[in-house]
Image (cartoon, rainbow, N blue to C red; front, side):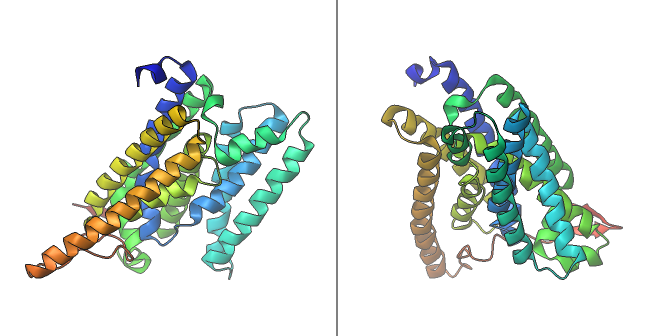
Length: 300
């Protein structure tokens, strides 16, 4: 471990991995509750257009990816709400438009190589610079702040949109806010695991945590723990074994999920024998008591 810290690029990579492991499972829990598990993939493709735009204009690809991904998330939500397009079709439009725009702009970028594209598609910790760390850190603080302020409202929205509307919550605003927050989370993680695998870190730790808990808060905590262990463990393993960091992190998260399935099954059998309501299978998401609302604001 000491040897790993001797390299400056690995110190930056470890900071990025901590931010990724901390933020992605939190927003992923809300996406799973709202049944938008593939939203991260769609936004990741749009972020690729932002990366290409940054390379074309010789600006920070991370910054332009954040802007373009945010605009894409807002556009997808508006298309879903204001037209007859269903959510999955709007997500498909995001997929196709994002990847097409990225490929087109990278083809127009002077000096762009396949290696440059690959580093953003699959992640490249060796290319994480100091500027990237500051941008990613600022985005992470912004995402966590939004979730801290609007977490209860987003919880109600993700549980049942009609209930949220009946309680007077601004459903359209919260939906756009959730999509934008997910977009920024994708940008935070793309330097470590790449835009093609970023959704895995948003969903897999949550799926693993759901096998072990029926509480929303406990699920978030377990998912963050699994995300941190997967990010740091995968990055360390990749360093010493000369493996692709993004793929190693995702595979480690999937391994934890497999263990969680076994442990969760054993816990459900044990609680069933004692006559206690069993833990959920993880297909419907964790459950908590619905918070009460007063004039659109959720109160404890």
